[in-house]
Length: 257
Image (cartoon, rainbow, N blue to C red):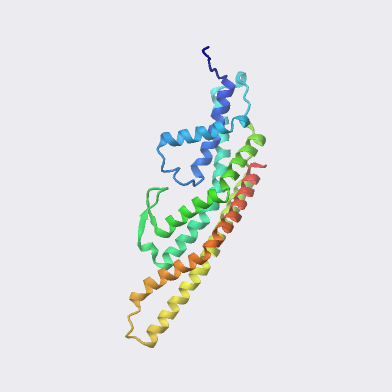
């Protein structure tokens, strides 16, 4: 027997509102390869994620829906999604900040490669830090944290409500300062080793001016930075997990959950 699939206006509006919230989050969450997807693939991915949250879609009364009200609701939903995405995206920027500081000091900033996320020229260590952070994002379960934030936000934040206040901006600014402090603390041990290496080479050059230490400085600093990063690599998952928990807590406070 032929079957007809019909969707009510309320269900369709619920899907559009859920899609607006999911799309706002995916703009800022640095998932590996998402920004490099074709636009059609990103639309399909956002729609599939919104469909996966079908049971949590907001209930919309079709009789009270108008074009202006639907646009206002969609803007509110997109703002909620952007808040979630910014909170989790800022948490991953600590690795990029540390890599930028190290790249300049260790000499890696002289070489640039194409960043797969932005398709622009970036330092080698910055691209490596983004790839490592993207892999650890899934390895330690931060993707599940984003899904949980979606679930909690759909349960607590309705399209009619606007949970933001001036305190929300202060929370995000505080999160950004904490991430800046984390990035500096992550890069500081390696930078200290590189400074000690510069001082050692300067003293050797002062003792014997015939030594051509300038040709040894760049490879020595690069090898020292790589050795220090290899030694600190075991701490990266723990550090990212702690930063992710800060982003999770900040997102809950911003949304009033």
